[in-house]
Figure 1: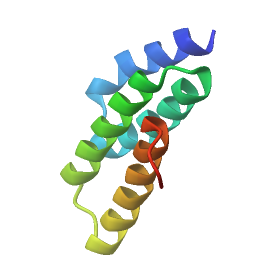
Figure 2: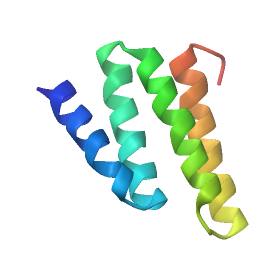
Figure 3: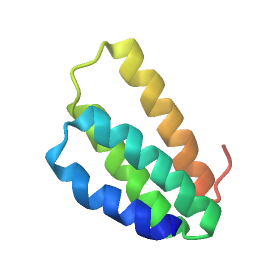
Figure 4: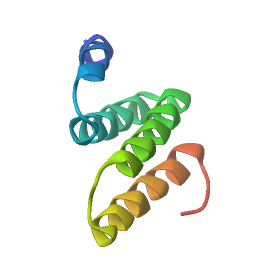
Length: 81
């Protein structure tokens, strides 16, 4: 059920702005990671990084979000954080 819900959310979000997609993709990536599908989780985190770059945010906020995403990305890839 979680996978079906996640995929439906992902199909609906292309019409939304980067900020909404960033948050959703981050949470859905966590679901996939916990479910053992790290490849999908990595893909979603990489897309979320793109969304952060597209947002007009203060540099401090943008760097903080990117640091969190890069930490998650390393974890999902099984790398040292």
